[in-house]
Image 1 (cartoon, rainbow, N blue to C red):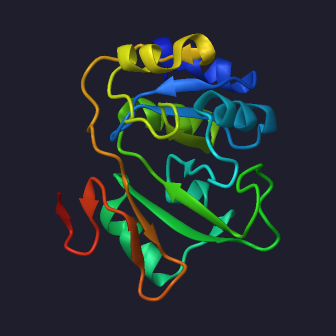
Image 2: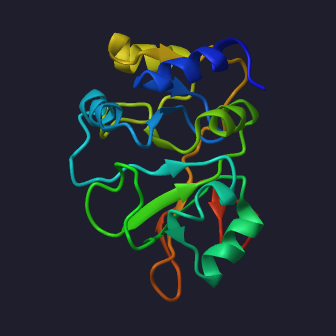
Length: 196
């Protein structure tokens, strides 16, 4: 059950809006993964290059198993680090999933975040397209105030949440290659199993 600002966020998302939300890493922009208008708006809000795909957030592995093909290495990493600050690039199932991301190609970046409020939101809305809350090329926001300063009124709703976020972006690992390869170092070191 979600309440307060999270309930408002769920309503805004169901209406096709874009919400700024805290996560366990940095503040993010989220919209329904099935909403083409919301996804397009995230690209516009951030001035994000069209060839950079958006990651997908989910409440649990079960929520995305029908969309992507988890190989043995990805399953092992998910068991060790999810929920948490690890994003994995995996192959989409064939036929491509009925969501508007990815826009092209056959891979999808997926993550199950370890943030209680966001977890509850994801359980209610289903998977969300996501990216950090900042103009492209700028440092991600770590507070609601920073989101408002960086993005102004371009976002439909900013979740009112107290408490700090992790402050370090997620680690991204490409699980479509053997062995898996770190694309972006971040909050966890998946191959040492240690927090950075």
